[in-house]
Length: 365
Image (cartoon, rainbow, N blue to C red; front, side):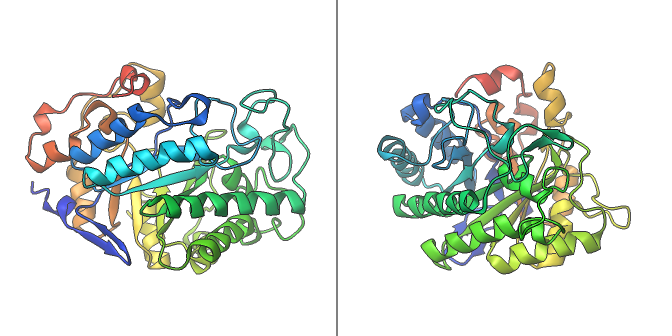
């Protein structure tokens, strides 16, 4: 099978990529006190030299006291952390790569009393950590506005540092997704009550980023149906519901939708073979990134809990990309084991790819 479709260039406004591969964001916690060091810069440089078209960083924290429960996760604010990220992007650019930070707040999944500000209360739209499990008080509208501006400031800082765009983490049951999800958003104001209203927090973030960064700064939104709190959760159950969910986000200014599935090859709805990224592209007309266990024979939850995952062929991926189902494909764990995964695929050397193991996640290489 020819893999040529993976190596076609991609152009969207100011974003010009040499191929269709993306390094998926994978937060592992190698930034003491939130500051990424030279080891982080080298980690990303290796993937650029390995052929990746676009790097999306591990989750980086917005400037909010309850953004994380882990002091090793990288911040995207403050003099020292931003200096570290400046070194990262300069290292990536020197190697010929393109990169975006993923900006993030973990919301109510933060355990009380943890992180760099243990006394700060965790936050969520309705005080719920999961459906039916109320732990905190709901955010006030003033607190929501503060959070919106923190996302916008992080995006602005990314542009000022020279990054090639920004990705907002709106997936997997973290803060933005807690607003999306009817199971954790029980608000009766403009931020809740319907599938459209539940997008309002993200819409305000997107619009604020546009105001701060302009129309030509690429903006990616990562979203998912599944949640860490419930792998079977669904924001939308039909194409019609999906369209209602996506329209306000698309209109607000998302350039690319990064559609997270546990297994990219699974159809999203019974009526079609299209996966989540395929449906999103068909509905919005916007470019999409697909992701989910690419090149592996186990989906990621299983592989992180067990002995790892073996190498799988990518024939199904190539078939879907040949049909233009989605525009870009993000590779995660396979790039931890094989920094040169893209180059090996380009050369047809799939037999030389190493299987993923848990040690690959724990070692920064």
